Length: 350
Image (cartoon, rainbow, N blue to C red; front, side, top):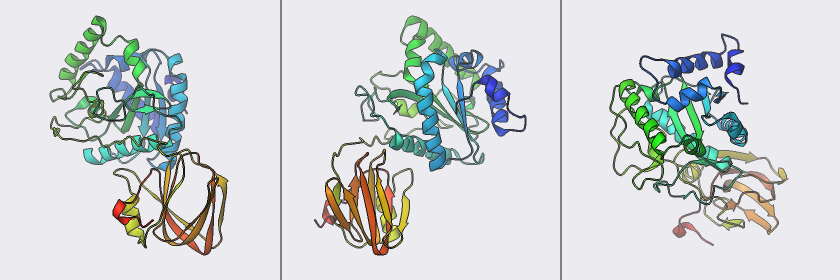
């Protein structure tokens, strides 16, 4: 799932993956003007970058991305000090900045829900904490998004939708925070002014500094206008904060109401229909789940006992809970969300 320079160059010339790599390589190695991220260029020249390619942005492709990112994190230190994982998506190139940004945060959120490891204890949950960083597979990672919609900020432009994952330890290995590293940082900022047709983004900062917000640097817009009250679209879900199954009794709910109750700020929910008496054998899920019943009835079986559910009821299943189910005589229709979504207290009947 991870390709290096030679792997990509062996692809057929008509393969979109090779074509996008060639656009990327041209940008990274150009001299007039020189690409600002000298560390990324060095990683490319040293064959320390790894590449992954996806034909779409959907649940399946993000599952595949998660597997590739896990593989990368486990091997990254063997690739070199200037390594990153560069991911290309073969999607619509005519979307707006806002649409690409929405897609970016939905990808990070979905990756978080399928992550099999807890975040390191030294990484805070609060996104505005100076020490916050996106994490995956136990590794803090700086994330950068490039899009075809960027125009004046050429350093964030790409021929196709592109996300780069760079482990935090890379910044430590190249000495950022030391005199040598500060000199390199100053060079990057100088090159940035030559490369972009806009002043550097005002929220560029240094990880750990009191006023720094890492998330603001992940997806940088094509302007320098960012509201002082802007909130991070990613929300740490504090996974596994419940150790047992919860049953919440509710009242009748329409399909539209159920979707809107469980739909995250960015992302999606699943609509599941079970035919009469359909059974799901004992299994587990790597993520927390909320199930909201729309019509029919269904019985869930867990190690804690049986839970009989009718329209409006919801079940909160912590990750890795062993459970099975059997639909009633009329079948059942329900919504599944990959996070805990509790009803407002005034709606809870029991």
